[in-house]
Image (cartoon, rainbow, N blue to C red):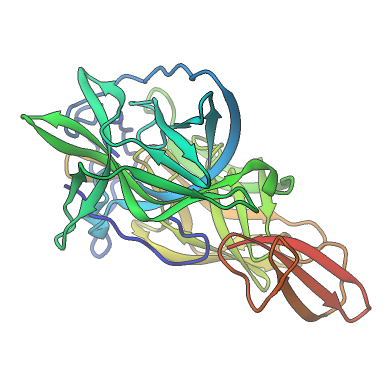
Length: 396
């Protein structure tokens, strides 16, 4: 069974089994943070059932709407490093399909590559109910069932066979969430329901709540493997990242562009820095860490703004993927010397205004003034020393 940790932080609404692993290109001596890395001898991740083929899913009939999901997603084997396996995953595009007779279908977010499927539910007022025990998909001949999970004091998760799983719809913003319960997928294994994967602290943000992404040049050095497991190195490689600036935080896509170009990460905008906290999942059963020499580090590091180069630079540390396989811990690629080219105002600065902020007020979406930003969408109004005003949406 797996353990779960609910992390309380800015947008930390915090992953899974059976995925084909990748060979590591580097042996790392983990004296403090994890395990020694060795090249795996088999090119498959056995997990509970063994290698899984990519699932094919046909969408149900209805009207689709795109949401972006922030949540805690189980990442296979991470309990060997952290004591838990549920790690944050951000801005994951999820289609919700609205069908006839108040039916709703949420694209499965747990092991989507190997299981696929949709979670079927019904809408009643501001509540979406996902029916317990429904079959979501099949993996290697085993049906996969959905239940709400119950975690005991030891961190073991068992199915709640008496209760459905419910999500609440905020009528003003359209945000759909459940921050309290564990959502699990089970298989019937050795005549009993066995936890296959799980997630928690789900928050679905409607696509139209987000401003358009800005593009910035990204420069990095790279070491990794090609499709033939040959080592590849690059110096001063260039790509383009996308940044969705929400004021106090930003989503960034493309920090690991060689293999995970579509993965989003969350940073906090702190003064002249972009504060990145890891681990954050980038793919099914793959998370991330900072690197320094032969060591991996988990925690927070800053991209610091450098005026001469007009760039945000991650000094002294690199960035890598991390996964586990047969009790070993591996990486497949490493990015170092990271530089995000800023605009003249910077990614985390108020665009088009060099004046000082003299006051800040927050409002909810109905226009009511509130003392501080609350969970969900807030309107932040900043007044400047030159008499101008700037209004931005802030998600918390």
